[in-house]
Image 1 (spheres, rainbow, N blue to C red):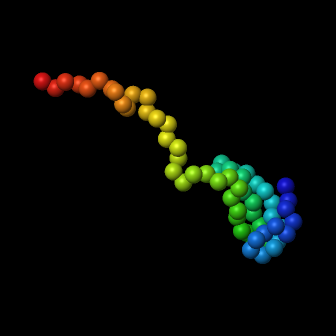
Image 2: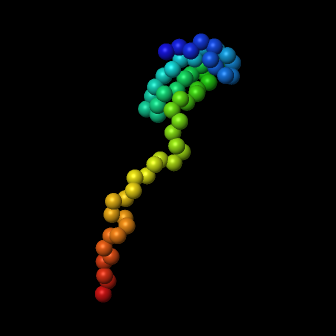
Image 3: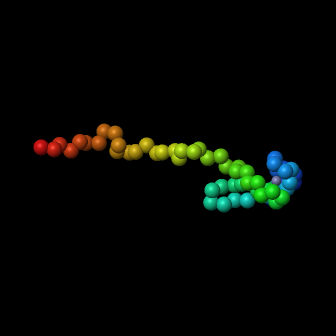
Length: 60
Ligand SMILES: [Zn+2]
């Protein structure tokens, strides 16, 4: 998909692309890349199932 004159840097035309990191737009004139998928800097961690309350091993 093409976005005419939507580049905030040079006012050029941008096209939308998608790679393994998600969607982004790139300017045809100046090459500016604009990420569309805002991901958290730190990946969300799933709670460990057995981290809390695990039976302790008694060491004699
Ligand atoms: Zn541009």
